[in-house]
Length: 280
Image 1 (cartoon, rainbow, N blue to C red):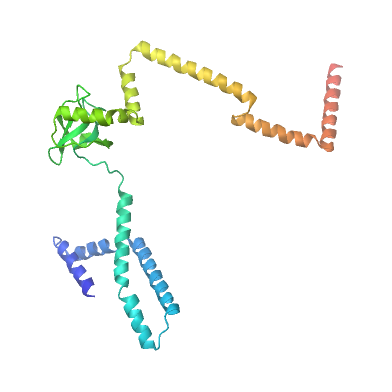
Image 2 (image 1 turned 90 degrees about the horizontal axis):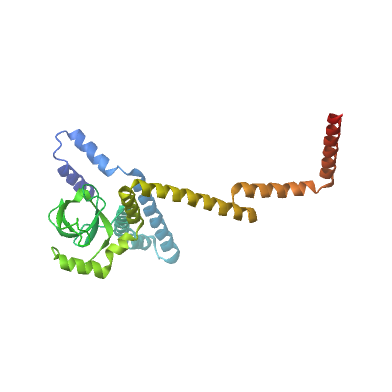
């Protein structure tokens, strides 16, 4: 009870800015009972652990009297149980925080970033220094348009690549580290970098180059379809050929029966008689 009232007093002091007492109490209740399902799961697990320890102690210990039995339960189960329960709650919170963490590519000196908007859009650079909570210093010696300049943190996307650099290092040091670690080559091999390079090349191409690309795509589609059809005739791969093969196989099984053979011969005779009657 003392712990509960201490917690309640702490909540009251935190929400002291609310003049309305009813609103303050509603805010406390919402903060404490907001995640009812998760708390129910935790309490169920705690009750299960308590029952397990109780039964284990009951079957393993032999007590002389009821007083000794109750005293042992109080010492070995009741007293350390809150500590175990508190450690279990801490473990659950850590697991939840770790699962909620999506990206760990923090901004620091040496982090490779991509420019999102502006005249340097889709260009990459390395964070050389952090000016404040909103701006960083970015540079890329391999790109002529990415000299050392200031970028807003809302305009950069931190990538998974980074190098070890001291803050505000020289351009020569940065160039040597990038050449040694080959970070730019590793980034150029990623899917996003290839997609950006293709988009940039398509934007810079002329009308004749776009025409050549269109003709090449058509030619590739034609020869791919031709080779696929040839292989499909030898060994059915397409869904309609596979379905036709199964249908023919089932029809062959059915037609091999004597009754089916009689029906087929009867149908052929009727067809021939109808054709002869039409000629007359």
